[in-house]
Length: 201
Length: 144
Image (cartoon, rainbow over all chains, first blue to last red; front, side, top):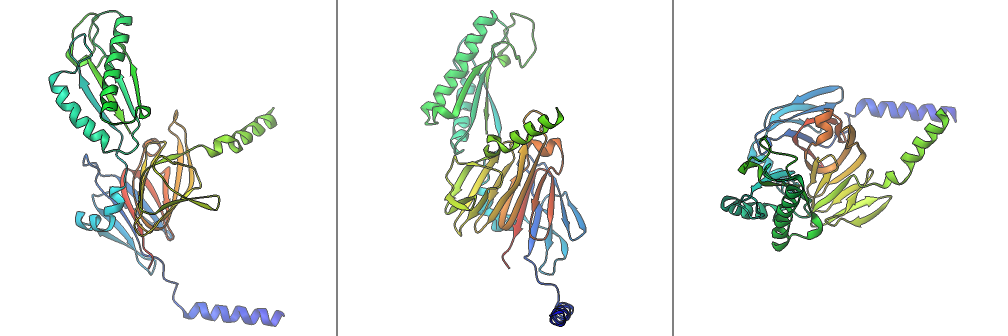
């Protein structure tokens, strides 16, 4: 039995010595620029080798022999290899701000135009989580502005529901004059503070 | 006292918190399945994912997932991607994300935990471990 075992070990050792390492699956790691142009960093550790990638379309390839080689991809190569993968990437969390007429829950004419773009963007996202937060300027009492800010948020929420976005995906809240975008004294009419923030993810 | 606290901690880990969703399937196209505890179920939009789930796509499949730290991961056709570890504390933004791309293609955008702690998100492949310092990256493991 012992002889058999050592014979087997000898055969195994001989086999290992004569055959090259088994081929591995080829791999690719790459950094791609974000939509805002930001270029990130990744670190690839493989068989005691550490490579840092921090250039746009910078890449490392692992060959079938296990070795790592630096590479640079082109946007066309990325599209060809990762087209369907990138198309499935969910939309990044985004924030939109819309402005209102003074003391009313009606959007300014400019923001009405903007609202159409926001709705189109929201409708592109399957299963969005939307939070609408209304704000006011500092004219009027706390109670009055809490109500007005909520009315603004709910008005925007209703417009979204009217466009076919499911009501249970949208939360509306009012912050009154507690979170001024442009800090002012009390009772100052300020157009930039009369707004809703729409956060989607 | 210390014993009681350790017991409480163990209970907390082993309790319902284990089954909490760590991500949500936001995009599912073609043949996409989620493997959980040995069983495979078709992945539909809105389905919650748990740590230790594996996403498996067919030749026409692709899927997109949002994780609780706002990181985004998508997988392409013929892909096997396992969530080996995932934890995230929404107060401290500390966490750990270990994904395992056994085969196929992956695109990802890192989230809050990497912003807090670089390389807290890692992707394993058959030959390497990749640490993420941020933000957008691609990984591919070919069949041959």
